[in-house]
Image 1 (cartoon, rainbow, N blue to C red):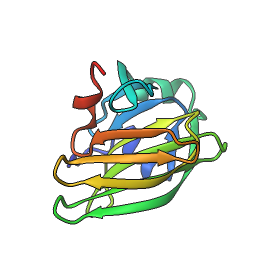
Image 2: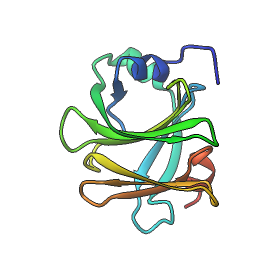
Image 3: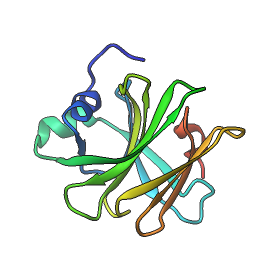
Length: 150
């Protein structure tokens, strides 16, 4: 886990996220994402972008979030979580370490809230399902690997 407080870590601690479909890593790396029901993971990884620059340009470019579900992965030492944003149509999925320090989070403006998490320990994949039946299935330890090129 990184000890540097990156913009996404600061937002997570405030229970906020950027209002931009993206995969945000605790390291500070950010990637645009797109919901893609035809892809095996349900999401496509797009281009990287500079979250700090976007927030500097528009500090109000955030939404409050509420965690609605947690699933502890005891063998992995991590916690999967999901929830919704302040506008109703939003949803997010995330992974934290055992101390609830953010490892990564994916935010979607038009997914609806994510309310269910299932874990396949054999394949190390998590499936998150929203209230509108949007499904995201990723390797919980490295979601960027499986979404690239989906």
